[in-house]
Image (cartoon, rainbow, N blue to C red):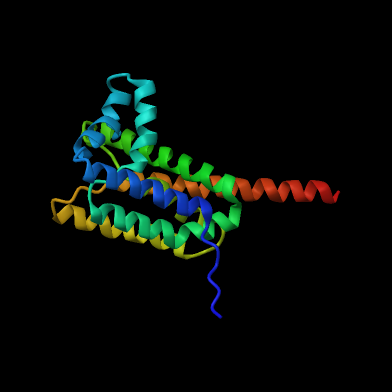
Length: 199
C-alpha cells in the first residue's frame, strides 16, 4: 500500500491562509480595497513618515495577491520547497525566517523603489519575498535548487523589461538574501553550541 507523507503543517497553513484571503477578496468583490488598504506603499514609510502603518503593511502585503496566476505561481513555489525548509530547520525557525524574509524583501524593495527608481508610490503585494526566503533556506542547507530561484528572477527582469508586467525583483532578491543569511547564522549558531558541549 502506498503511504503518503504527512504534509508539512506550517507550509500547508501558509498555503491555506494565502488561498483563503485571495478567495475572500475575489468572492466578496473587495480585492481592490484589500490591496489598497493592506498593500505596502514604500513612500508611505520612507517619505511620509508613517512608520507603524508602513511596518504593518510590509507584513500584511505578503498575504495578498493580485491574480490567480500570481498566487498560483507563488504557492506552487512554496509547496514545492516549503516542506524541505520546514523539515530542515524546524517549524518555529521556519515560520520566523519566512516572516523575516517577507519583511526583508519588502524593505529592500521599498528602499530601491523610493530612493533609486522613484516609483515608491506603487503598491507591493505578494508572498514572493517570503517564499524567496524559503529558497534561501534551501540554498543555505546545500540544496542547489534554491539558487535556481535567483536565475528565475533574472529571467523575470528581462521579461519585465520588454513587457508591461511589473515585477518586484528587489523584493525577491531581498527575501532570498534574508532567508539565506539567517539560515546560515542559525547553522553557525548550532555548530558553535555542539562544539561548546563537546568540550
